[in-house]
Length: 239
Image 1 (cartoon, rainbow, N blue to C red):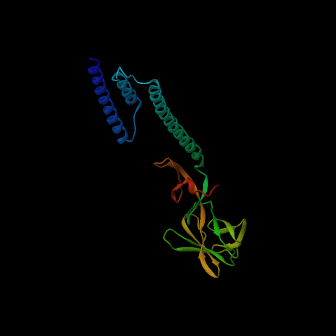
Image 2 (image 1 turned 120 degrees about the vertical axis):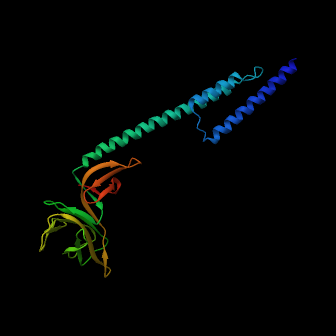
Image 3 (image 1 turned 90 degrees about the vertical axis):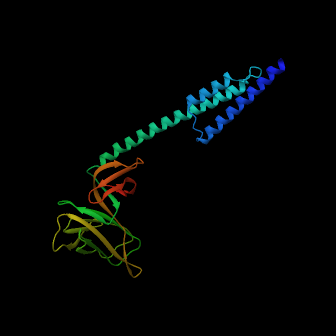
């Protein structure tokens, strides 16, 4: 009789073990994403169906509780991290909203001249040059100004143009427009002699911030006058 009970217990143990292995395989196939409720239900079922002649060891039970605690802790950590991320993005957006109405400098060859204001920018000059000039084109692609900028030393060349005069590195140039421009969207093309050859240089121009939004990844995007959407990471300078 004892042998019969032992045999039945052994078969039950095998059945339970097989069931547990199948459940474990299914959990692994689904990406090992086992929720707290499912975890507890599985552990309770295992305890209810354990072999009374060979009950679960305390160490095994404690190990399962530790696993549950680890799962619960990770879920809480994920929840707290998501909350922190959301709060950080909201705070970042709030701070960025203070940029509305101000101007920023971004890598670009296009800028908008608003009546009564100026277009400012920086020209990246790799090496000193004996001659540099700036061509300004309107929205139709027509050259409207050709401004001589003379010899310049290597480094950043800063300029401010108001449609009539130009200031270069803080000094007002003697050049003056024959037909002053009041407003519009323009493209700036700067050419300098480098190693005896003409070379077009990179420019960073100023633009007013009209609004601030965020993309699908939470990245802040500035909507700039005359340029459209630009990532805040592309801003070279906040003016």
